[in-house]
Structures are given as C-alpha cells and as structure tokens.
Length: 77
Image (spheres, rainbow, N blue to C red):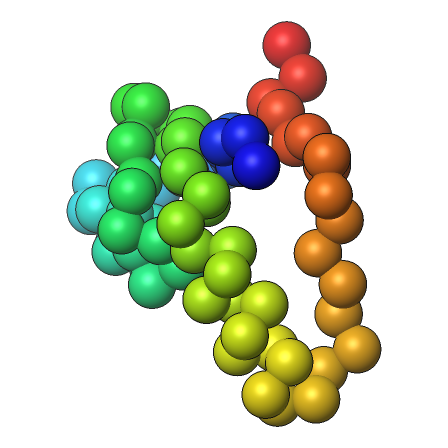
C-alpha cells in the first residue's frame, strides 16, 4: 500500500482570527498526528497510518462508509 496524502486548502476570511490556523492544526491532529501546515491557508496530512484505525473505528460503529483504494485528493492548482 502506498502513501495516502491529503492536501487541504481552507477558505479563510481576510479578517480571520490570527489563531485560527493553529486551531485548525489541532483539529486536524485529531485525524492524524502527521499534519504539516502550509501557511496561511493550506495543510498536508499523511493519512497512511491513520487509515487502518479509521477503518476499524467505522467498522465497529457499523457505519456504511467505504474508504476507496487509489483515491487521490489534491489542491487542484
């Protein structure tokens, strides 16, 4: 299995709180501890190690969610 990398771009308002990016980082670290913020409005998450955990968690809770193999998400520049 290859690496699973998620690129996020946030639509932050021009007048947002200066601490908002730090709060977003802490929120993303609830998904995976491997978060890199790319200031001011982007983040990269390495989901590779987190996917088995989320599959197990979703399976135990009986959710009908399937994680797609080979899916690629990007910022789209």
